[in-house]
Length: 295
Image 1 (cartoon, rainbow, N blue to C red):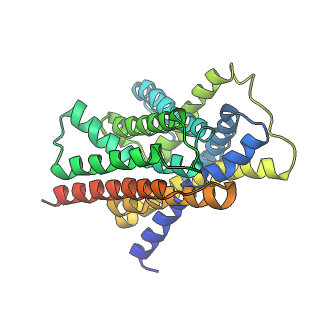
Image 2: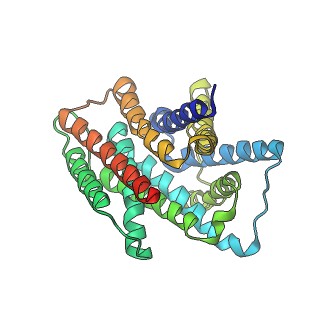
Image 3: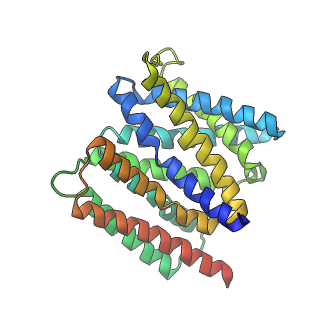
């Protein structure tokens, strides 16, 4: 297997694995667990697993004291992105939520333009227009689909929180940290959010007894978290960030497939148009950025 082939395969694995979030979260909701409890276990076990992998590989845990406040803030943004998305699953179809989350690159472009005065190209404006059109279709998907204003707002805020997380990494001194180190501390300090939401962890619900609940907890800690994070890092090393970003379109597609196949969600024509437009908008944005960098 060539390095390029390996990169594309792992990039696809990263996108598909992250799209499995609702596959593990929704059954836990149906068993009576709240969002904060589900995410507490996800972050706890993911931190332990990633830390163990880093120890085995000999990765550095070193974090300068001056970077600590910024790392705490990054962890909070990271966790809030998860909280808002997982709350949204309760107010709208998970497939549509997964697609709306995909507008994050558009938010990044807007943040860089507004706060860092980076040039916004014609193609970026076209991408934003296409994306907004797609959002309009998803907000009114037609009869059969389940979407609420609360759900849409939560997903948009989740996407914005993750966009801020990414911009803060790329525009701050913390960008010198290795990806595994950065992710480890993002997960660790993200626990602050769940400490607040569960009154110092005293309101964390126990995992219901049985194989299914624990399988879901293990699954959500490993597949859309550890597997996704590690495979995307290797994929970027093999083929670069642009192809990996485009392969990210498999993430919302995975969410839609799980929603329709497992949770009985209805994929309407208007929703399908919205999904295609949002994915198209992100691909246009990524390719236009690649074109600018190649000049």
